[in-house]
Length: 155
Image (cartoon, one colour):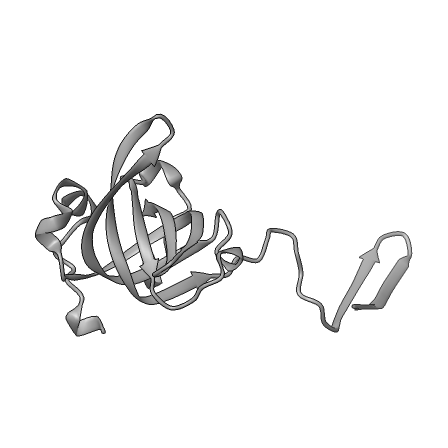
């Protein structure tokens, strides 16, 4: 799909005039705010985040330029798109949709998902289960000689 992606359109451009980019294929990154089933598929509300190396969305929410909707036309259980999940989407611009954001109306650019990549995050401090072996040793010199060593096995 890479040759078909239009990298000249910024998210800011899309916000200003979503209808003028209808049919274009874009790559956008974001954080899932909400997902819900509709008759025609699953609508994912995303907070746009700039893409970093490897097309991974930034973790800095302050860099967001707004929100957008991505429509997954095949069945996608909203329970698998939990709030805070980071995704990269290759999608075709389909226009915009006006919806409520708190007490105001907000115009969301809309994309039809062609490819959805979910970035799995391993929480800080959580280790993968498995077998590991470590070793350590030491030696001291002074009025006498001391030595030490050991072996550690962890699961």
